Image (cartoon, rainbow over all chains, first blue to last red):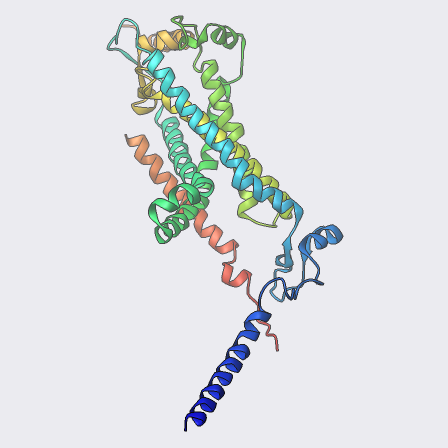
Length: 336
Length: 40
């Protein structure tokens, strides 16, 4: 009886050993290093060296989607993910920091002698409407555009995948649809104010004297001083550049291939982040940076003392024009 | 204030017009990247 039991135990042990070896064999075959199924296959780098791109055939109508990778695409992706974020971060945060330091050092530029209580029309209703239409579109375009560059690393961890996805979708709609009123606004700004924004000799003196912002001088200026002319040309040229490159991206493959669109995206994004930084300076000087400046675009009128301090030559022109109009109306009215 | 409200109205009206134009010109993704062909 004892020997039968020992034989049974031996048989059971041998069966268990066989089962273990049988189960372990396939696992061993899958261990890396032992067998490499892609050892003789063509590597990605070899394809690049031979073909300069990786492409195949697709069955969907858009045959361009058959290009999987190209060298320029890698450069562009690196620019978008790394370089652009550095450029944008330095430009925008640098401008914010400079403005805060400047405000702490210089403070608000006050109206010397205080307000006179008399006002003069600075911008009419049409000009202000065009300005605010362009400005509001720009702010939404800037926020939705910055979301494309900075949203994933900065906003996504804060609000989560689902909320970020919804927000980004609506931001993209807003970016596309508000591009057109912004473009119309830039064109109207160009046409409305080109007459007063041609650089002249007065601008040189204005810059030499720090524009009345750096230092205590108040250099004379016509309707637009050199700083405002700089903003004007940034809006016209920068706005024109982002509009043209933006429409190239909005209508893919209508006017250019993939390389052209990559160049358009690089120009669009770099000009846009510099544009945002410049507009931060514009918003600063139009609000907390200078007393009485906001009223020009708020109510459309400015205090006479403000106009004399910052746009003395323009104020003299206005007075001369009003005097001439009064003289004409007096001459036209019948004598008593 | 009136100029600002007018500006917002103008922006919205122009944006709606532009959106309807874009929706007519541009194909949705489901159409642009689809085919009626089949692979057997």
